Length: 112
Image (cartoon, rainbow, N blue to C red):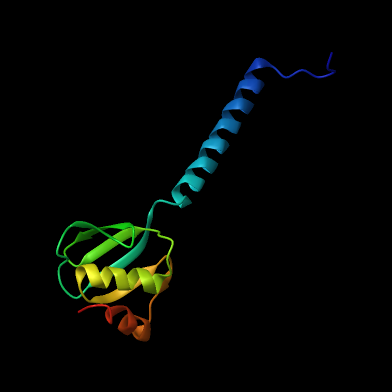
């Protein structure tokens, strides 16, 4: 038998505190989990469709603003596939990295 025994109130408060911390940790992990918006792009003009697939990624566009979840290709390849499907791209970001002017020029070389 233990020398010290916690009262039922203390045990339930400890359990509730542990559950709250666990829920908070799960919320932070879930918000950073794969599957959220990763690519953000602005096209030179409105997208031809509101939803379409380019390079195995589903793009969702509203006017000239497009977003997609993370794919498996490099950002320049993803940008080029978007440009080929939707038209010239004026800005493109993958996560917290934005393509510079030279990379955007290469991205838009795919547009015919």
